[in-house]
Image 1 (cartoon, helix red, strand yellow):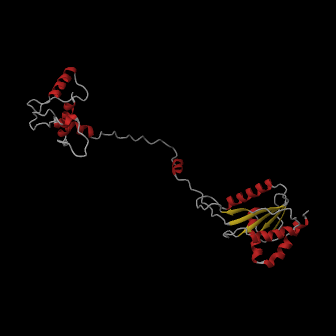
Image 2: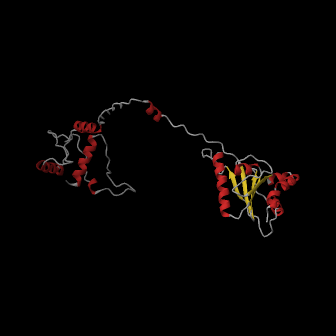
Image 3: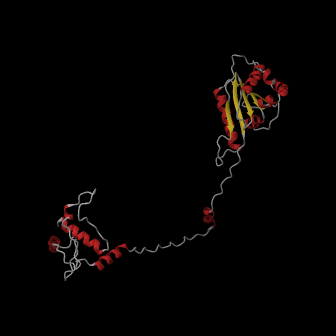
Length: 287
């Protein structure tokens, strides 16, 4: 089939289903040049008397070789357009109509002697409520064989300040440590560690974190033989016991004493005498 006949057939089909097609009759300014078949194209006449010689020859050859896929339908007798519009539309509607879906069969319920377990299994599992996170801040420092764990105000922005370090230098020197034994930088453990309402950072997790920190510190510095706990938070979270000033708790086989925090001593310098009394047991054992 020639290009002219193919385009004639395509436009005839478009007209049959109610679609108007437009072709240029003269060159349009700024537009691409039309295809060669456009100049000789003729729309079908109203009475269907258009001359489709090439198309008719192709249709005759198709009728001899049998029906082929995509072959054009036979023309109606009487010079009609050759397109059975009703049949075409009916075929389109048939193909576009939704196919009936088979109704799903509901399986019979399984016999159960005791339906109670199934009901219990379907019930949602109650989630364990998240415990409120405690708030504290601990500073870990080492000088010689002495480990100091100091309690800091949880919301204090400055943290372990120069005033804290200067005061601790004097306290540790009074315990018999020499100038060659330098005071380490503070390692901070703030709690809660993350700003999350869904993450479990309750008391149990806080105690595990403090225990882990102490264990790692003693593993890194096995020469530590004395521990000084300063403040309520250090005593409570490290030993699990309530704070008692001057207490001598047992901690990993090391000599340990609890006393006032450095922040309290900076706020109330007159309490330094109390600290001096509290640290006498570990001062006496210093080499």
